[in-house]
Image 1: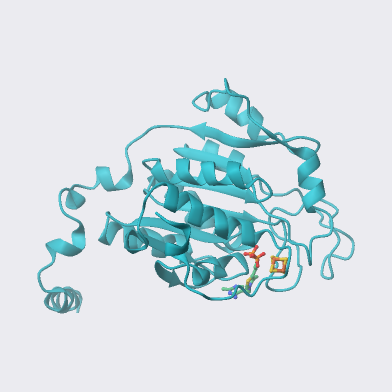
Image 2 (image 1 turned 180 degrees about the horizontal axis):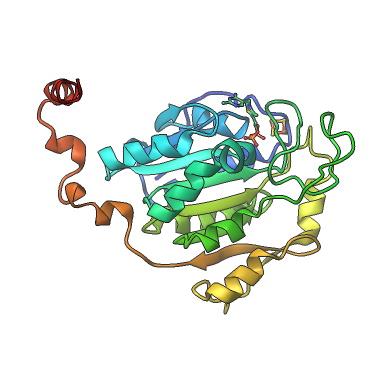
Length: 284
Ligand SMILES: Cc1ncc(C[n+]2csc(CCOP(=O)(O)OP(=O)(O)O)c2C)c(N)n1
Ligand code: SF4
């Protein structure tokens, strides 16, 4: 498929130089290289700069509350398991207010993809520290610097038995496109943490800062080895690994739920209005 099949002619309201532009381009590239037409894709987002990404993309879209993209995505996937459901939001949204949803849906292994634009700051609300800001980062509301250590999304996901955990960098579009393709084609919950410079508010973790540190995992790296994956997850600072860090093949939530056997759920319901009325009647 051609890249412009995903264009919707909206002009992104992002600062020039923001890493979100590359991420948006890579999603289009990944889906077009996988030959997935827009009608098969549902993008779900919360609130934030990253969460605007689906606005600039031709596909099905649900833009909900801050931190609540994952439960909406899970609901949609259960209703129509044929959809490719991708969550698109920032580190504040997904690792902060949405943390609970992230944790329990990793455990469930719902077959959705969660792409986190991790700029280590709250961009939309003008530069407060986020759950992934490093200790000591000074902002207008953290004038003495961040006091406690950041959340490590990779280590968290691994300890929860995530079926796919990867990291990439918006400054390496080929790598990022490849990671997105692997996440989309993976059967199960896929967390992709994407390092993304926020050129306006994060003056510490700049494009150059990431460029000096990120390195690709070697060809012979085995993502199925829990112990080495966990060691990689703890690497942060001078060297930051990117690639598929952990894989753990296990049944998806949809496979475990007998009600979802066969046709997508929405096709099994002949008259949704009648069914809704029955549910309400049963409850009251
Ligand atoms: C329920 C709720 N809590 C808080 C907010 C305020 N808020 C909006 S965006 C945001 C953080 C944005 O940071 P992030 O999710 O990292 O995305 P970015 O803008 O950096 O892409 C916050 C705290 C909100 N809109 N709704
Ligand atoms: S504030 Fe930061 S994250 Fe938001 S558009 Fe500008 S550079 Fe990007």
